Length: 345
Ligand SMILES: [Zn+2]
Image (tube, helix red, strand yellow):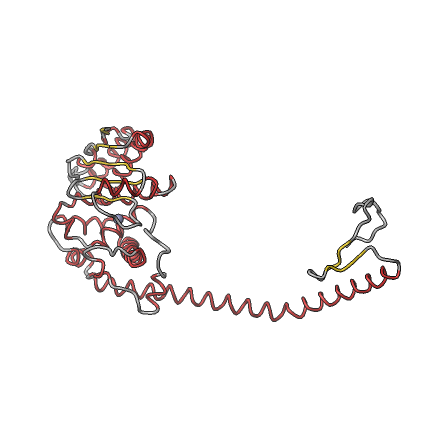
């Protein structure tokens, strides 16, 4: 077992950042509220002997990611420690969770137990492990909402925040692109992913892609301060829909419709690109084919005259039946390049 004090993380850098923000806040006359994020709670790391080295190595990185996640949410920090459990494979993950997890589960953040279980082998490469950690640590940072608000917030929104923070879409490529689904009007609604995600990776992947698209768009249009305001309202007991309306004046349904339009537009753009590419390719083949055919005819005529010529002299060339291409037969004592007067093919 290992206990990591999150407060030891990059003290010099953190204090420099804090004094910069303190100066800014003092200038703006705002209260010094950042003090909460500087006192992160400790976490307990549990790893089997084979993973202890890696768990130790990742400790400072985890502390850094969690600090970044908490800056991202802007929520006051829940001071209770959390538990991080490292396991190797699927069997160990299910053993730690106590239930059979879907095949695509690489890590699980549990609100009730305030713990994160991560399966290193399922997560994959070192880079993928980092992405998975960032994703899960955002779920953990969102626990600062408090149990009621955390549970009341739609799953797609939780996943969208985790994916945007991780910089990667979970299960991407498992289903059709949401752009094409939007164009074909077969896109499921966000409300279908409110209470949770289906076990099927195909259906789940659409939910992940949708959640990501919503949060990414929200941040692009309104910025991080607006998202922090939404999270603060959720923590204060508002529903997501009402928090969005209070922050930007637009409800989930309105934002979702605009998102669908945007996705359809992007699919149209992609479709247009493909049709131009196809047209270009067709024109190229149309123009290039007679040239290619003429070149092949000329070459064949040259070869035929060469064969006819060498046939008269008892030629060392024969034509491979399979390839239709002349194969040089060398006498056993002669190697290519030895006779400088030989024709080069
Ligand atoms: Zn997640």
